[in-house]
Image 1 (cartoon, rainbow, N blue to C red):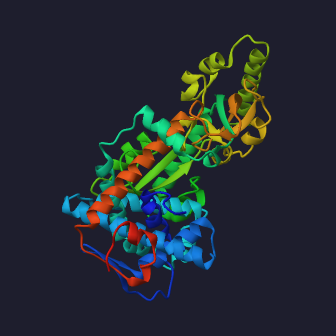
Image 2 (cartoon, rainbow, N blue to C red):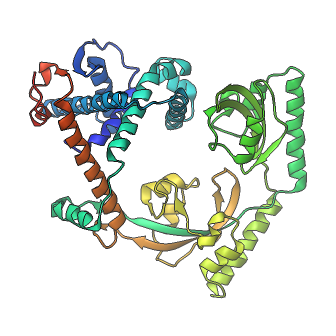
Image 3 (tube, rainbow, N blue to C red):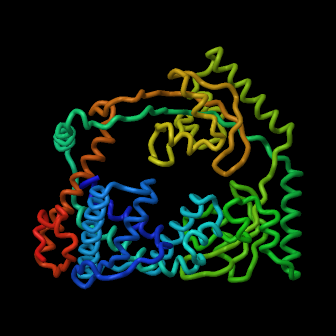
Length: 459
């Protein structure tokens, strides 16, 4: 674990925040860095958070000591960065802090099963209290990140440095790259009948009229909305900024005043009515009711039959997969031969865990793991990113077997690792220099930590 990366301080901040429900921590100041302090509770929250996220309930005594040394080093480095950010007058606005708080809380709610009450129970606080208690820590995280960016903004890396970095890795420590799949798809979305669209719009307009006559919007959302992330919260989405929502949804939402409701809005996800709850500057908090149009059994069968005929064209080699994707797929990726972009890396290629996470049907890995490059599936059902039903044919473009990293096949991965290493060294050197001119006081309990001697810290 030692010296994995000084940049991991951001991770420690996040998991430390997740552990703030801890009780019975006797507080005291254990370090002072410039005008900033580190308390015993800061350390304990970070330690507990690291154990929670890593699944390490207990550690051996020497491992526990090393973990605490590593984390106090990270926290000192964080305070150095914040101290410098304040000297450099780097400003973080309330809107930026709120945006990141909302995003992080959404992520935690998803991780805990989409239930806000479970999150509140974990923390022992209401959602509003969690946000209030995390605000300053989130501001510090933002300052830390911005200062790191500033200190490494002018760095670049050349090809020789990448090669030197790779050569410096002991042979038995060269990482193993898991199996990676590069996939393409031809997607056919069933046609939704006009009668279905009209029925949904009328249903939503009826709900809107009933709310205007005094009935409860939240009740309708809980009963009828098909957005699993917001339905049980009365349709409330939480604060969002521009660019975070469907364009049509965003246009309608930003046109509303607090308390107002939109007419029916159509997006890729379905049909909505939107109610403005609150506006803070350029950020809004809205509630909505979503109803998704359902294709008829006949439309589903027509879509499947269409792709079955495309499958026949592929089988008889009348069309290449790339050409068939361009001609027949309903997805924007058809212009690249249907290649599926990994949303977690923004590149082509999925490792197994990523593919399982990406595929809502959870069957894609099972289908492709025994295929050869160039093979494709028959017509199979899928759920689109918007949660709608469709069919697709999936082609395995390439399958890169598990292997030790090498410069030929994995240059970009190695380059990224080399660049992060260079950033780390730059930041560590900056910290060592900065510590000489910064007031630092640290509890003697940490005298035995190796970084104390390395950073030439005096008690």
